[in-house]
Amino acid sequence: MASWSPSCQRATSMTFANFLQHWYFHLPDLALAALTYVLLGRLLLEAVLLGRVGSRILAPFRRGTEPALRFFRAITPSIVPGGLVLVLAIGWLTTARMAWYLGCVALGLRLKAGA
Image (cartoon, rainbow, N blue to C red; front, side, top):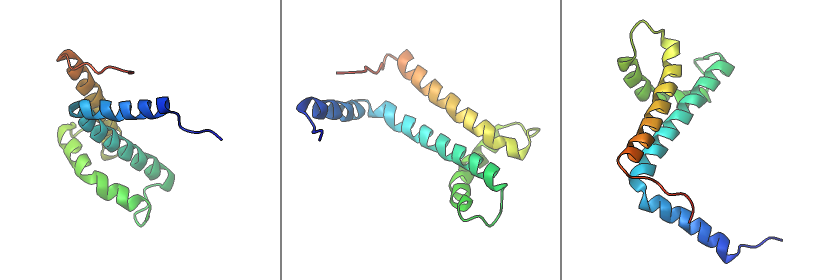
């Protein structure tokens, strides 16, 4: 049976300390990642369930992501079909995460890995 050694506990607390030290980077990054994955989940469920209106599984995904999709519909050109806005929203969020990371690096807020 494996047990936790002090070095494992130190590595775990260093990770949490790193999170607290760089909260200004991690919190927006986690929010963008969570929204991206929820939109991706909605996209996959819409494809599997073929967009059934009465689906109990799909309803929370639709309710939770509709405000974000309204925002992305506003910034996406009107020539883009409604179904494609969801795919583009995932792309926009991924681009925003990369821009956030590169912006932090450019400002000298470089995150250090390891102990």
